[in-house]
Every structure is written in structure tokens, then in C-alpha cells.
Length: 256
Image 1 (tube, helix red, strand yellow):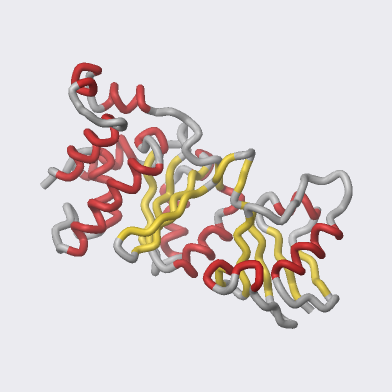
Image 2 (tube, rainbow, N blue to C red):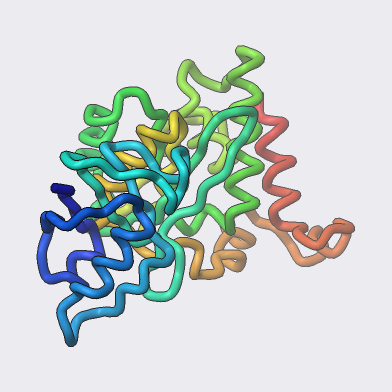
């Protein structure tokens, strides 16, 4: 028997939190086909694509993907990674560090939420940045690269990389100002930056699946230009396809 737990939007497709498969199922691919055949009528589509599938807490992509062998007693968690037609998170690697970014709904934008996640996932570095202060994936990746590099060189702006990230996204060395301006705000979604082992990131994704929103769907360039007092004249002088990102990264890199 295999236990399948549905997380996030997958619950709506099957109208339940979990089910048990008693048939002989050898692989994840066979399991997906079985689930598609068992999905109730008149519920949201489930085509088996765009899913994060964890077997006994291990991301299947780190095993054999859809060819991962399943055994009786296995617990499989299924998490859709597409929400409303858009991704709810992005993943990349920097210097052997696994990074995952999540857009979290503003209803969760409070200190207690972040503190509880840090307690639940002590092996992950977690920081929250107001979504309007991050332009896109590349902007986030380049700033995070600076912090990770400075950590490896023992040259962080503060004792913790989480604080270093906050300071660099806010372009200030004043922690109070950074928290006030770039930190959590009840009126805005926020980007949760998570750094750590893939197995822990998978469990984090499962834990916060209901809190996620579509990531990087809004263009905050006008706000960022106004907040950081970036003129069009300055941008026009930069020979780049991404002048705002390049300028922000340059400012972040020279903070001391």
C-alpha cells in the first residue's frame, strides 16, 4: 500500500488530503497514470505535469524522476508548482548552494510567520524581502550571489547572511532602516529566500504550499526607480539590457 498526500492545489483536484493505493504500482509514472484515472469528475484538471513529488521526504528529481521505484509503505507527497498559470517558486544553484524563492501571500507577512519557519527549519537560511523590492529572478540571484560570496570570504555586513541579504536588497548598512523599508509589510506579498539542502527545501515547500502566490508576475521597476532615486538619464547611460538590475547589484556590491 502506498499513501499519497495531496498538497496545495492538488487537494482540489482529488477533493481529499490523501488517499491510499492498494494496487501494484512500481513507479511514479505508473502512480500518476493511476491517479489521473481516479480523479473525480468536475474538479480542477490534474495531468501529472508541473509537480514536485517527494517520496518519503526526498524530492523524486534527486532519485530517478518519474522512473523512481515505489515500495509498499512509501509515503508520496504531491505538490503542484504551477499556480494560476504561473510558477509559485524558482530554484537555482550558487556555488553549490541550493536556493529557492517563494512568493508568499501578504496575509502571512508578519514576524511570527517567519520566526515559526526558522524554528521549524533550523538548517535553512530564511529571509523575507518585500516583493516590490525584487525585480525578477536575475535580480534576486545576483544579490544572493554577493551575500553567499561574502559569507565564504567572511566579509558579511552583519553576523548572519540573512541580515546581509536584507541590507543589500535595501542598499543600506542600517539594519533598522532595512527592516522598516524592505522587510515584512502587511500590505504586500513577500519573497521568501531559502538557502540549504534540497531535502529541507522540499519539506519547506510542502509546509508553505497553501501560503504561496504566483511569483514575479508584477513589474515593480517604476517603484524601484522612484525609491532608489534612479533617473532615466542614469539608466540610459548604462550599456546593458538590464540597467536597473545592474545598477542595483553594483550598489549592493560596494556596501561596507
